[in-house]
Image (cartoon, rainbow, N blue to C red; front, side, top):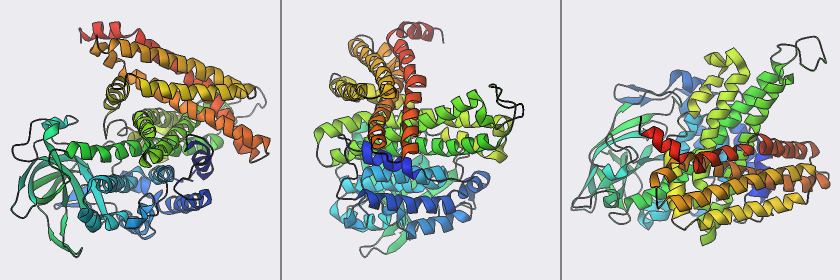
Length: 584
């Protein structure tokens, strides 16, 4: 179960894709060399300490025994090292003890950690989201009380939205928060699917909980957000009594088995209002956007892990003679054309997803600096990162099993675990359909397609630049142009149809998201071709740059061409969808 962080590819993307100009990327006054040094050190830690946990965690899982959550024994030691080395602090403000690295570096760190072990990586991932929510919506006193120890990894954080009767429909949340005379609230209710809702890795767990105050309006607008710590925290920062929040069970899951997914019971637990009453969902969306982006990066992470295993196996597994007749003896299966096709598809999807994620991180950083145009573009791209990268991770991990053949179906080889772990990614933090509805409803229809057309315009600029290059660059430009035109045709149809027949429009929302995600990833790989070609002319890192270009061409001719099929599903498939739905 080995893993090596792909630092060279990550740094290429950070340098060339994480800023809209493509000329620099670290941002925030951070030098690229410093980013690379931090990621290399994290990569070594993850390879040596975290990656070996993956198999252990899958076999042992998190257990609920005697009312306590028990993780596999090595997890506590690994987490203690993780916190001591300061890895939780990478993306957070120096004011609260963070390193202040740009979001592109934080995305890379998230990938490296989660490629090592998704189960382990989920705890820091949720803490990062809770930190971001408190940074943007918490009071100064709340920030001072909680953030430094969350950013240090001494405490962890969770988000508590879902309830038994309210899955993604948060307007049905029933959890109550009764105001007390001292200004706190008594929070009562049941929350389910709470990742790392109970564990012993940290001294405290800071739960961010959606609940409804008395006389609040019905539906999502009546929700408020509360800090409900596992242990109450005194004014001096010392831990006090255990709060009235209890883990009553853990879920038994298909994958990420060492990540404890808890059912939590709040019984008059002491909570502290974040911001204003009835604005909880608005505040929670801050955390949800961060979490959704991070889950998309998890899709890239598990894809990278599957790629590395499949490539190693294909180089070592000897079976059958090559079809080109170069030898009469059996050869490593990497010599067979269809194995090559599968490996290249895995690599292209992984590198395309990484490029999209890191580029989106650049937009998020620009948005944080106050650019409204960057904010609009970041909002447009985040659902693509979340849904496209996670859906494609299912394909990549499934191909990893296929490359292994019958050995892939056997748990001992480890690749089946990646497939099982990946299956949750298109589901949690909002299913693919929820991301697609968000993309169509909030990101496209709300502004009449203005941001979507701006996105298409930037793709077209990259096409034009590629047309001035060599034959490979021109080949990518042709396929980009074709895919962009399919995107524009689909967009026009959706804009015309949504008001007249919303069922038809939203029936095409997932194909539209996948088409757009495919185009966005290819756009970034096109930008990679421009950067790699320039490096080749300078004689820099020749083998790597040649590989980057060949991967982009493969993506354009084997994956990007699928945009045409999605366009047909959107613009011509609505009638058959509506008709067939009548007969379900």
